[in-house]
Image (tube, rainbow, N blue to C red):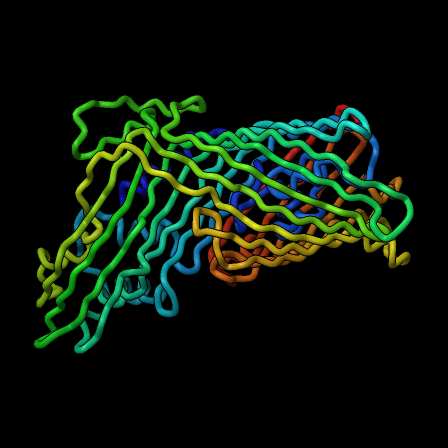
Length: 480
């Protein structure tokens, strides 16, 4: 596990400006994050990448535009219980040690109600360019983004066993153990066009969009199978067996050495490092304006996979366990180090992209409540992950967001300007509620946004589960 920490930290340190939204729980641009990661029907032009490509055409406007985002950075790190520093403190050491009474109580408090779950997501988009030459061609966009995301789960039963000992006639299972992380780079080419438009009737317009994604992978590690069964027999003897399998693949520039390696690699991580995997992905989206200022959007994103072919290894651990004295160092080491495995080279290994089904609806509230000063937009999203890849979950995510220009100068319903205040409500993969907040400034030539997905953790870190998140983006309007 310590090796995983070292690799993770190396990735964070070396990616300088490592956008698109990966997965149902992935972060995004600062405007969307400030609205509680709500953007499936409200994120127009450059902000639509990775969410709903049909919104790229800015469906209820015939104006041409050229907009560039440079740069865009977003990150999210949260845990249901235990921080990364504490995980390394208790589990990262090369040898076992005796914990004090206070340390045992501190550790057990993290696992008393649920497993220790840690999630992280960092995305940097060096550049996004969106262009609409006229009302008939449609809109096209190109973006490059790097994503480092993953999660790991430490079973609560492991902490209970270590702290309380093997209690009589009790069964233990470590099947909840999980670890998965990757570093992917996405080259995204998107196109959107209006299919229908009318000033009369209920349906004002209908747009469709598609994104083609070339994926380069630079690192992947994931546990694919955990099967374990332990029980306490006569005289409190702990007996059981476990079966663990995992795969990994790393760029040559990371210089990861497996036990079987005979070739010495030189560490040289940089933005143009050699990929160890490649793949292809697709996004499809539809959006429609109904009535006045109401937009409905639906999309499915990240259909595809990554094939890992560079430095691929399979890690397997199959063993039995017999412990009759938890104070015996050799026996305790066999328990705490049970994730140690034998590695063998593998030709290739494939992983799915974080495929997600998205639906959203947005409305310009100011059109219906005239007493609201400026311009107020509200949006609601439903995101459903279709697999359990990093930043994705089969747990559905709902969110509600608001974008308000209280001092809108022109009060153009399509292109409001001035200071924007953002807020929203959503929850993370551990089902803990998050209150998002952000601020922006929009003019005829620039857009800048700064936001966080959880303002409570920022101003009162001890009142909620540990969560750190922020996003910043700067968009330049060349035309439109």
